[in-house]
Image (tube, rainbow, N blue to C red; front, top):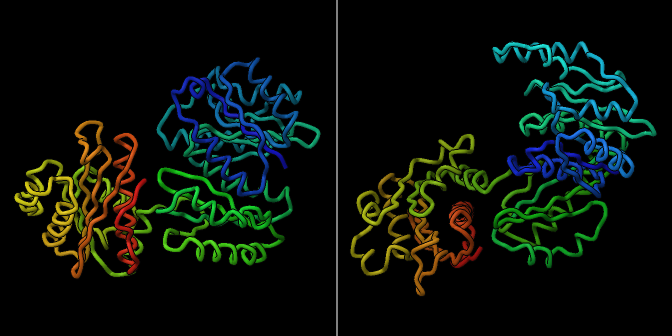
Length: 422
């Protein structure tokens, strides 16, 4: 099966809205074993949209659209597809009821043009939308080809695709596809690829890498007649990846939503430890990432944002002489911050971060990107030197990730690299 993604909206072309739908759909389709060779973004223009439809249908079995299902005159996604198929749009009673119910729930007045959202070609398969006012549909286009209409907002498109479109696509193939997402921090893409290159050449189960900021994720996918057979194919592959990569693998999950923060919180929970934070350049990002995880209250006791030099002394008792002798961006100050935070809140472990995020303030001895992370437990304390690169946002985010990874590894009783770039 070949699919093509067609994202519709002038706002996408003009850069007013980031096209995250294409990324989401590409990942999910790849996990299902559905091939993709092209993607298109087209504005709200009838002529150009028809042209895009016809081209996509000439080279794909399934065309998946996002956007243009609203009630306004520029929402032409369904009308143009129906015209190509030579069919009329008709009101679907079930879709009408859904739209009316949603407007009642939102305490909004239903205008006549809103009912256009409940209109599809008569042979369409309806995709209900519990998260918005626009239903979707699977529309036969002739010659065995279909167009799948999805709403534009990601909060509506993603659950609709996962709960309704993925099962439909799986039924068409007659096979079951099972995926595992292997999350990696602390090893670059090139080294991961070098260690796993032979595994990436296998077709079933397959292993595919992709990267995010300072992380690598692998998607392992197996195709079989039953879920049990697919799981049996996947298990040896996942185990071999773990064996080759070691502690840089921080999670193996059945979706791609696992984060370093969740892994750190999980490790602290398993250890039964509480944690405190003392943050300078990260300004609360470490604690914010952890408390974003459900159940973090059982481990996160509190934290300090010690952004200015004197607040490191006022809030977490960093000796002024240590700052004077060693510089505020130093391993010694990072250690003192972590020790002070742990002592103040009487936790089992504490983490700190101090450094230069830029763009100003760097020196030849301490260039922008110089960061130190401190870890203090009841029995031990150490600091990490992070020579980071990039802009201010990147340096702060990567520093935060290193801090979370240090918490994770320490709670697991694993060795933490004392110098790490990124």
